[in-house]
Image (tube, rainbow, N blue to C red; front, side, top):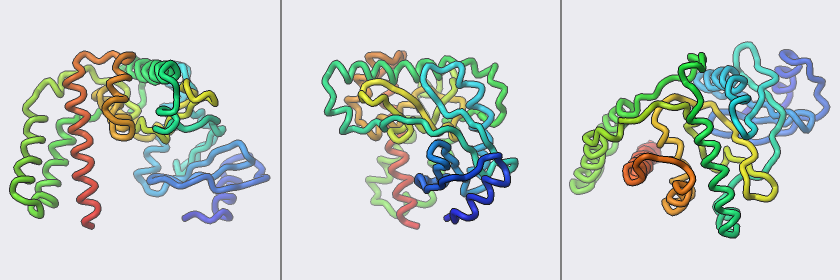
Length: 272
């Protein structure tokens, strides 16, 4: 954990800001955040891999910001070694299941329309014109074949025979259905989860989306993964009333598979 004195030294070394106040603003898997002077949010990378995420954001966000209809962070300060990135704090309230469920049907439809609009907007950005090499293409088949290899080595031997068979059948079904890989690659947020979605104070329209460190190019269906996991299948079905997807049944089966694999990965992590 970074000490405030070290944070202040880094900020004063690499930015022209005069620090009047410095508060911890939270900690995630990839960074520690500090609020400076009540307005600037500084995020400090934890690992070398996290520095690469900061580098990616610092290059990508200025390119896509003018192309999106909702606010995204606008980096103002980035350290030379990408150990930190800073932008004006974006205001708003985070989307939660409680907020959504407490909304009237009309407000829910407005929010769904807003979310679908952002995803549609993001996914229609011309990836060939991005010119940000740090935003890499994700080969989902290769990724999940590697995941399957790890699961077979580290988890399957500890499972009952019938569960081993079930796990293998789920992966086999995903790989054998070639439609799962017939998609036009798009720009993905790749971590479109509730804690990255900010709403206006009315709780019914999207105001901002944050944390593009996992942005990639790949299967558009993947950007519904976290919403599916956190909000449930009924929410996704309602969202599909506004978000165009060519094959709803295929999409839902993929989302169920993505969640299934992450649950297996969580079990491996719990064993460590």
